[in-house]
Length: 310
Image 1 (tube, helix red, strand yellow):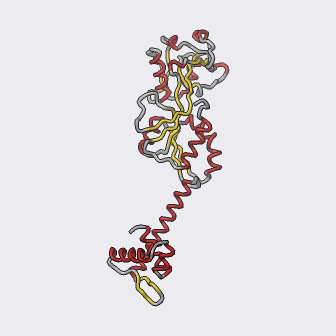
Image 2 (cartoon, helix red, strand yellow):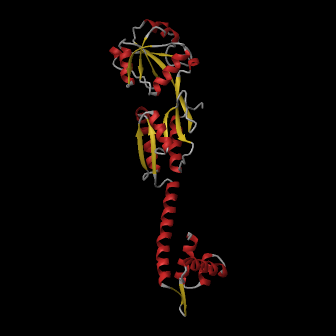
Image 3 (cartoon, rainbow, N blue to C red):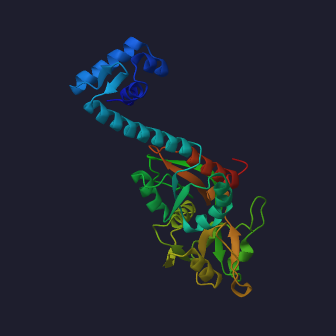
């Protein structure tokens, strides 16, 4: 049975007349009569008895009517829920984001988002980019905000680039190579010829971290096979150790922060020809559906974090 058939029986029951029901439903009387007959033939029982007071439900018709009311109410509630989601009054969003990006991005966006969508539930998954991509493919996340991979991108995922954050060299302030760096237009820090790092000891992050992927790509383009003396999970620890002269490391410029004046590291820019950066992006699955609420949230991400020149 269809929702249209349920509505036909419900309307005839309430007005007790085929002709009045047909007018209310904006269909012809013969068409409605034929529809009721088809329903009765399918069920193998009569739904209505003709009386001087009009059409009255049989016992089977009463059961049908009660079921029709319940089912149509479910339809109405479901449509209302979908409309609420589409008008951003209700719903849920599952977002993937790294810890650092969550600290940067979410405070900027959530206040404005909650004003517009106060009853939307947000579920935030903070994990590595590889784990987020897996959850996108499995349908556990609606979208993720992460840094795009340098290679081996999944054909099942879309990467919408928002901005680029260059990588820099981090080393001890008194390191001899600091004096070899030169000021150049378009760079935040003095630019070091990265090939001069060929014989330097390196502090690197783990191979499953995207910072490491980008660092490996930069060094490969400079034809440097690094001597890695320490592998860490925490980029702040890597920066601190580089500042104390234990080795050099490569980090995103946005992640680099001055520590205490006593052990503040030197920050040196890398020439752009080495593709010395990573791309902040919105990542979605090719098969994912983005609701109006999802799209509104992503519009705020673009508003605050998309480069003006892209």
